Amino acid sequence: MTGRTPSESMAHKVERQLRGDILTLALPPLDGNRANIGQAQKARLAAGKTLEDRVKSARHDADAAAASYRADLETEAAIRAKDLPLAEALSAQTERSLKAGESDRSEALAAAVALTQTRANALEAARTASDDRLKLEDATRQSADASELSLLSQEMMTK
Image (cartoon, rainbow, N blue to C red; front, top):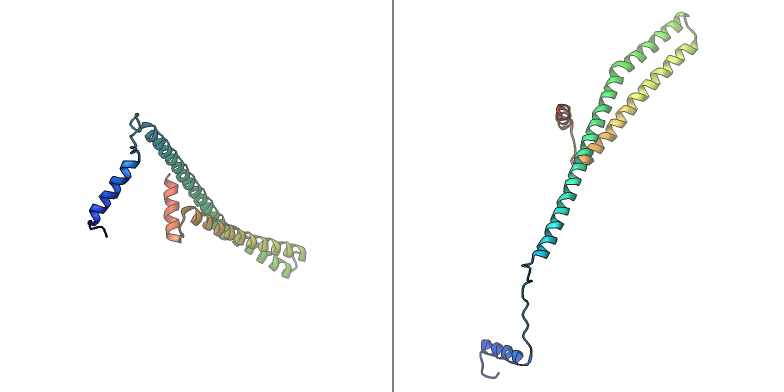
């Protein structure tokens, strides 16, 4: 070692570098950096607009999925409450008429086909409601149980 302390050695190196090189300083822009600030503000506004658009789209998707799910549940309930009992009663009536000799086998078969079709319609409505529930969960980014869905339905009806 040359007998210098580390801080003296560092100062000596800096002094030697400054003697041979030109010292350059970066000065701030003359416009007070307004151009960069303006670009940053434009970028921030564009990002805000993009976020607003995505939120609006997500809300629209959630509203549409909730309305579709609610409509499918109502359709399924109507089929099970009205159509299915009527088809079952008609099928039973035609079966009794067939046994009593008041109708032929084709009427009983037609009533059985109508009952089967009504049951298939109820299952299709349940499947569609299940698909729409998944779409609702995707739109809201969370799983939805029955109590949450009823609250959502009530909120949407008040809108």
